[in-house]
Structure formats: structure tokens, C-alpha cells
Length: 208
Image (cartoon, rainbow, N blue to C red; front, side, top):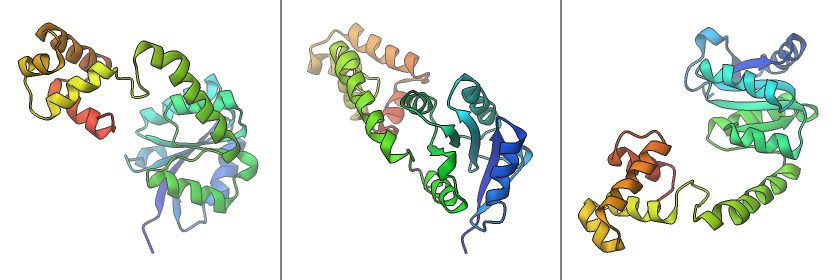
């Protein structure tokens, strides 16, 4: 049998935390761990009433404890909460009424494998929000959903293929100063060390 997935539980109230723990404590696929034994592979389960400022603060405390992948189990989930959770990097969302032991195992397993989980009825609304953002806000400014402009993408692609600043300037009909400023903007915005780090980041995230 595969090694159980370590799960760290946090909740907005002690009763919810105890109830969530009791529902999965005897599942062989999962192992509930305390904060002191959390590591980078641990999946967090966060039980809250709704995805609001208080819930996001609890999420931040989990991140401080090295829990990067978090599933929020909420009593109430609406469109605004889904968007806020997505912006905060939450890996999964589940309504409390649907949080049976079997479903919790399914969601935690999916998140552990790198998938994102959102209730189907809210997924369509989230996609509409993303489409609206792209059409009305990003596209008029020449920015893609990656946060990179078309110029930044073009420059990074050429850097990735080994072109120097002068060659990039010639190919794209920019000044060398523009190329340097473009790379500086990218490294500053995403807190990257240098152009090599910027290329590695863009490739890893699928931006180029």
C-alpha cells in the first residue's frame, strides 16, 4: 500500500478542527500530523465558515508552517470566495456538506498529485472571471494571463535560445536599453536574481 499522505489540519474554531480530524483520522490513505512534523510534502486542510479575510489570515499561518498545498473546507462558498482563494494560491476548495471522508481522501490525493479542485458549479464562474479579466483589463495593456507583456515574452524566448542583448535588440528592432529595461522589469516584478533565473522561471511556469 502507498505511503499515507501527511495532512495538517487547522480550523477557525476548535469544534471544526476536531470534527475534520475525526473524519479522516482512521483513513489509511491519510495521516494527520501536528505542526511540528510538517514538511514540504504535507497537504493542509483548513476548515472555515467562508473564504474571507480571517480565513486568508489562517491560510497565511499555515504557509508560515511550510504547508504550501492547502485545501479549504468552507461552510459557504461563493464566486467571490473562489476568486479570493485562487488569488491566494489555494490548491482545492470543498463545501463542508460535501466533505465526507471519501471525498476528503479524493481531494487531498488529487492536490498531492498537483491537481486543483473546485466545485463544478463554481468552476464555470471562475473561468468567466478569468476571461473577463483578460479581455477588459489585461489585453488592453498588452499583458497576458502570465503577467508578461508580449515584449517580455519575446525577449525571454530569445534569451532562452542563447541570444545576447545586442542580438535581441536587432531581431526585435528595439534599442539595447529597451531590452535591458525589459529584463530588469521582469526580474524585479517576479523577484528573480538575473536573466538566467528569469528564463528558468518562465519555462517552469509555462510562460514561454
